[in-house]
Each structure stands twice: as structure tokens, then as C-alpha cells.
Length: 240
Image (cartoon, rainbow, N blue to C red):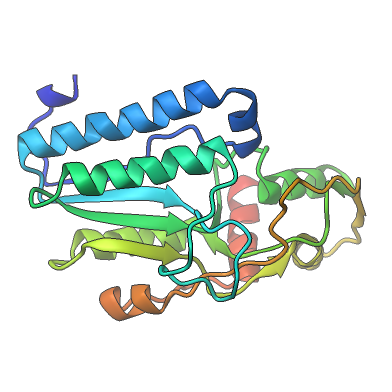
């Protein structure tokens, strides 16, 4: 069991079921896994008196009232996945109050090597590498994309920070549409891509959102090293 593991200084909690469409089909197992895993991690931190817990959380703001989205924005949860992650955040902060410093990273849109092809960036890249046709559900929604290597560098900084505690929005601070992502990949690959939308827009689709990362920069002196084009270029090199 977890409690058999000793000599731990810091815990990074990354365990979760994550694919939002599946959470509508099977909400029970999303709640069960995401909340129970967080409860188990919290008890481990309590018993072992862990100094710091870093929780990889998700975007909980729904359709934002304003951009960039700061940590004080109202919460609006539209899927069992988002709800289970938000409840887990609440559990961790309450369970470990006065025991462990909890850092919750509310991640916007990560991309990088090993991400499942269900997600938009690997879905586009896989098609672009295999042919000149790229089919997506919707070309218009804009998201804040952050390369995985930038997130890893942030975690490294937080691990080595003495004062890390609280909730942080994590992103690049800029948004790009699905169509713009395809255009950038077309430029990287130096080949024309025929992009087509099947015009399937999700219910309650968020059309634009990007993170206010001023708190992140202030507390950790962190800046991203990869632009979207540089991150996608590095990603394609690693998988191609």
C-alpha cells in the first residue's frame, strides 16, 4: 500500500481519469477514482507528515466572464470530470490543513509526448503526419496551450520553493484557435494541410479562454521557454 513507502519529502498527485467525454458516459467511475485517489494521497501525506503536496488539477471556470482568467474567477463546472477534480482539490486543502502545504495547479491545456490521441493536439498531429487531410470537430474554439516541458520546469521550481502553497492557474497566457494550431503545424511540416471541421460543437462549448499567470510569475519567478510554434516543433521531432 501507499503507507509502506517511506523517506518521501514531496508528493506530486497526478493520478486521475481525465478524458471529459468519457466522464459523461461513466460518471460513477470518474468520481470514484479521482476522489478516492485524492483521499488516499491526503491520508498518506497526513500519516507521513509530508511537507509539500503538488496537485495537478484542471480548468474549473467553464465559460469565462473575462480573460485572462485569474484564480478569483467564479467556478463553473460542466462535466463529471471537472466536478470530481474540484471536489478533490477541496478535500486536499481541508484534509491537510495545518499538516501539509498544498499547491493546486489548475492546468489549462497541456500538450506533449505521450498524450493520448483523443486530445486535440496529438489528434491533429497524427493526421498531419499521415496525410494532408486534417478533420476536427470544430475549428473555432480557442484555448491556452502549454508545452509539457514548460510545466515540468514549473514543477521543478515549486519543488525547490520554500513558500509554495495555494491555488495557481497554469498556462501560457495566450489563446489559439484549433484552426490556428493547424496553420502552425502546416508551417512546421512545410506541407499544405486540408483542414475540415465536421461542425460538431460541444454543448456549453467554451469559445475562448486563457490564463492570468501573474500570480504564478510573482511567486515562482517562472516564465515559459516554448512558444506554441517552438513547443509543437519540439513535440513533432520527438515523436516523428
